Image (cartoon, rainbow, N blue to C red):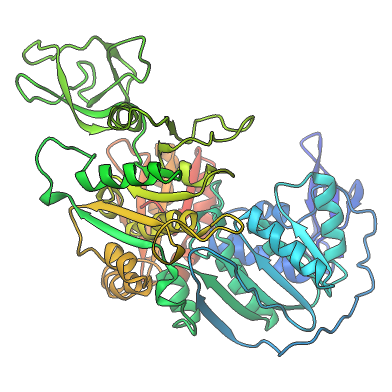
Length: 569
């Protein structure tokens, strides 16, 4: 049976495999080995075909996708269970639709009245709330999330095989083995959590669209910040939220600030004091870790550089040891300028540790803590303190406690001007996360500002940027309107194919040669020969070139990672 998990011999080991085609003619091979054992039921035939498509789309091995589409543990029953049927009141759902929703608050997710509904939600907390709501309404709900144990996920996977259910979970839920898929719903389609960080870096949104097209299922995309990709694939939004669904947005033009204030503008200081006095929390976002990422000598104004490799050095994070350290080669040295031997420096680009000290001095009666991706909050969680300064990780770790009354982006230009093709979309999504904190009000609470909304403060030297204007107008489609012609003119996705190749120089060179022969434009490799960028007129042309046998042969020359449609390029 197609998709069945088996054990086969390989180089003296017993390894897992999947039956891709049971009807294939037996090849004339002298040493063809027999299957050692049938282990478990696997993905159904339609999902196996979807895995093959995904392997072509993201230039990866089919086994990687078959593994994602299989249950974590063994399923004893190979034959699928008898399909279940259920009909619920409601209008039928057809076609593809995009709906722009409010950043926070409740989400009304449509469900198919007949057949199975597949809901992809990158937020585990919201998925749990939706699942409980649907169970109370009498729906059969299957949850497939990484937060559950392997045993629970296996049991849920087995239940999904019978159909007539609502499957909800993170990106891996898109492979659920439902036989009667009628509707696919994707929440927050621009969230990076829907893309696997490991190679092949597949995107659950694109898999969901392809699966729906193959099964004639309806599609609903619900997101507060649509991407250009989803608008091109699905069409213009059919619904938008109310104009006042966003928090109150205040834009601080840093060009008007007096010299010497740095990141702590007068508007920010007033907003912080006002928020703390009302007993609310303030969250300041700055995507720079450490104390100072860029230093200049106060005497000669020369940048502090490493005497070994020439890279800029940064101030050490620990208060006990004063000195400089190179982020590139880890060379450490005392606080001494190499140019004039001065011993005092000023921070050109302060990190969150330095800003934490400045905020503590500005608000001496309020406790200030710093948070980044490395901060350990697993045991006790994020403390309920008045002021939090951190990277965007702080937006994910705010727990219960006093409500958030202010989210301030201390240097939004760092995101707006990032050298990435999707910088505008990613910056808007960062702002959306802050808006969600402000609109997630406590039970029985009305909020902390006008109309029950929090306050979103954006510090920038680009007040006319499309992301800033989208937040100010509560209109995320403004970013799409500006980005679409720009992407089309540059031939960036979804109007062209783009891939990054990284790895051993020999493997990268061989892969570049292989795709160049197929008409793909190769930019690079770089000076070290470990990275190159590939461009093609379309995604299909690029994927066809990467599926050539010569690219597979390049993998044999050394480590090779291929990221199709990379987010950070």
